[in-house]
Every structure is written in C-alpha cells, then in structure tokens.
Length: 187
Image (cartoon, rainbow, N blue to C red; front, side, top):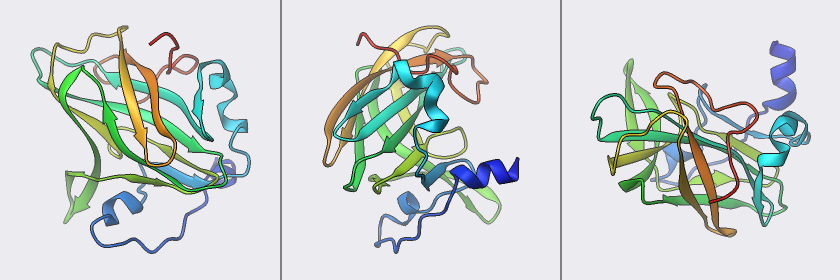
C-alpha cells in the first residue's frame, strides 16, 4: 500500500509567505501533490468532472447535518493539470449565510480549525479536501443538509474564474463522497 501511495503522493516544496502558512502546509488528511499520472486515479469520476482552464473538480460532497445544526462542511477534490499556477480563493453558494475555506491544525495536541484565504494549486497538482483537513465551512445553513440531496457550490479561482458544481449530501458520519458520482451535472 505504501508503494502505491508513493506513486501518487509526492511532496510540494515551497516557501510560504506570511499569513498563508496554513494554506501551504499539507497534512495527513489532505493530498496536495505533484502527479504526472493525474488522470489515472480519477477514471471512475471521468463522466462527473467539471473543468475550466486546466482546473478540474472531480468530487464535491458534504455530510448530512444532525438535528438542527446550523453549520456544516463541504469537501471537494481539485486538480490543476494546466501549465500555470492557480489558487482556490473562495467558495460561494446559497446553502449557507457564509462560506469559508478552513483547515485543521494540530496545536499542542489539540485540533483546531483555521480559516485560510486561499489554497495554492501549482501546475500538475491536486488538493483533496477531507474530514480533518481542508474543507469548506458552511456557516448559518439555510436548512439542514439531508442525505441524498444536492446543492450548488461556486468555486472561485484566481486565474480560472468561477466553476459551478453540485455537492451531494452523504450520511452524517461519511468520510468520503460517493465513488462514482460525487459531482453531478445539472446545476
């Protein structure tokens, strides 16, 4: 298994600028890598991809919310197959009053969420948002997120502009999106 992962996960070396350190440091819950075989891993998502200017989204999903929870989280997989760097700078939508890009940081053994202003997408790289890592925080949900439902998200990239996708709501404890249909067309 380790050898198979090494094929897809190679570290990115960069010197982060002040204020964006959290967005530049990958952790074990995120895959943020250079990958010359970028398409090989995503064959099951081929029909459900959304691409614009070299940036491809292959999965967008959220966990269902329990009870009357007013906050939730969405997760996306983004790849940059282009020859130029890009950045995910915002996520918009009407499912919540406010959306922010967050990550989790371990400070003295305590996991804390931290807002980040952007996530860098160097050429030939991928970011995998997962529980415990990068995510889109949905604050002030308009209504509970129910399993099986879809809601639109607009991803805003510094170079590529806006890309609209649909997030599928999975079960309350889900750790990943649906394998063959994490992003749906139609929104």
